[in-house]
Length: 313
Image (cartoon, rainbow, N blue to C red; front, top):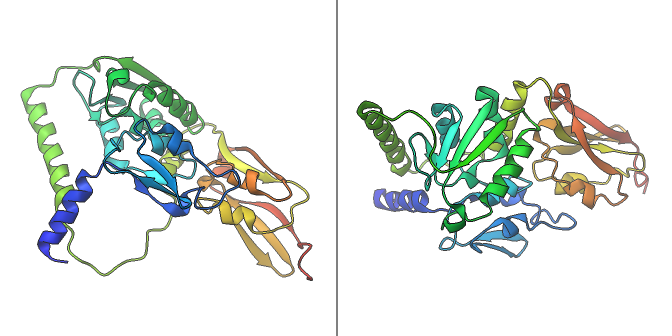
């Protein structure tokens, strides 16, 4: 691939409004019992199609509002979160959408704010203030954004107590002087230029391991909280130690290992999203969804151990 091909690819990537889709974390792709259509229901523009056991995003219809990313239980749809986290930090917990008046930091649509972003900002500043424009008339997010933000704030409270205030209108704050405005513009230009510079062809590297950024933000916020209500599953008597729960788990939080003649189910609590895929898909229906203490969040806990009934077959 030549320089101009790389430049074109970088430009198309930078101007593509769609979030990244990781099919391995999609409950539809995982064949979870009951499937999942939350992204389809959340999209205000009909840009989401559920075809062939995967999610397809229409590049023309997608406005990049981010509403689908917040409702995805497996974090299969995601935007880069670093820039939004940086904006929240620079704004000291204050952020406005691109349609709202006022000074300060902005994001295209407040629909891009996830529980992890809100919880992490809350762990720093206590209160998060968001300013929105007229969502009912907005061509990006639409009228469901305020309700969506309320759900995201409620979920964020599981990982760190956070107060989220949503204002309709201008974002309150000091007037920005010439020097600060120039510095903000220069910083934005540098970040945009960095995104547009084409990457030279390099040998392919293995995909980065570890939890997605959204879960890392939740974990960071939880580390600063006195107590958390992190989701975790529990396995009751009657488990046959079949591999269904491990197969449908979108974040690979559940794993099954063999120890002699026994099999052991283990849960990495920090990457459990509480999606409920294993609960619905468990053949004997012995998995229940509960909450973990802060001490358990960084641990891998044992869920169940035994010799499966099919071991001697």
